[in-house]
Length: 306
Image (tube, rainbow, N blue to C red; front, side, top):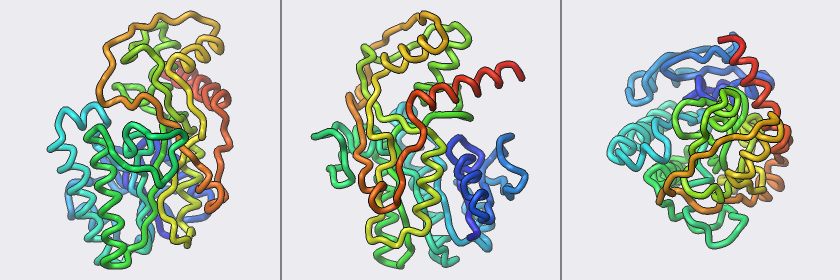
C-alpha cells in the first residue's frame, strides 16, 4: 500500500511510519519539520496542512491516509476555539474533499478517546457511549469523526476511527502541558518540581505508543462494518500513581506542586477495548510498568546526548 501519514514527523505519527514500513508499505510522511527519528526509507513531504495545495500535491499516488495532525491540545483549544476549528476541522474537511477527488481508498483518523466521551456515565467506556466532550479539543475531534461518516455516506470514502486514550512512550514531547508521563519523567530526571492540576486523583487510561501504531496498521485491512475502535490499555492510573511509580524506579522523592483543577479535565476515563480485540485481533503488548521503564531509559540516553 502507498500510505501517507499526516503528522508523520510527530510522536504518534513517526511510530505509525515505523510500523507501516515493517509491513513493506510505501510510506510518505507529511509535516513541517522532519523528525530525526524517521527512517531514511520514509519519503518526507514538507508542507503545511492548512494549505490545500500542499495537501493536494502530497496525496499524489497515495492510497491510504493516516490523519495524525493536530495543531492544538485540550488546554490551548479552549483558549482559541476559532483557531482550533480553522486549523483542524476546516483543514481536515479540505483534505477529505481532495481525498474524494483523488479516489483515496481509506482515511484512518487518530481521534481522542480521552476527550470525545466527556464525563462518563459508566466505566469502562465502550464505543456506544454517548459523546459529550467538555473541551473544544474533544469537540473538534468529534466533528472530524462526523465528517468522515458523512463522506462515507455521500461518496463511499472509507474510513476508520481510533479513539486513542492517553499515549505515552519514547519520542514523546516534553515541552508544554500535554503528556503527563513524559513530562513527569523529564521533571524527575532533572530533579524539578512536578506541577499537576487538582489533587492528583484524576484517572486516565495510558497506552504505549507502539501499541497505538500497531492498531493503526491493523485497521487498514479491516472490512467490518464497524469503523470506530477504542485503543487503550483498559486500565486506569491516577496521576499520583504515576508519580509514585516513577519515584520507585528512580529511587527518589519528588516534590509536587498542586494547582487548582481545570474544568476541561474529565475526572476518570478508562476505555473498554474489547471491540478492537474481537474485530482487529489487537491488544496492548506493553504493560504500564514496562512502558514507563522504556521511557525512562530512552530519556536518560537523550539527556546524555545533549
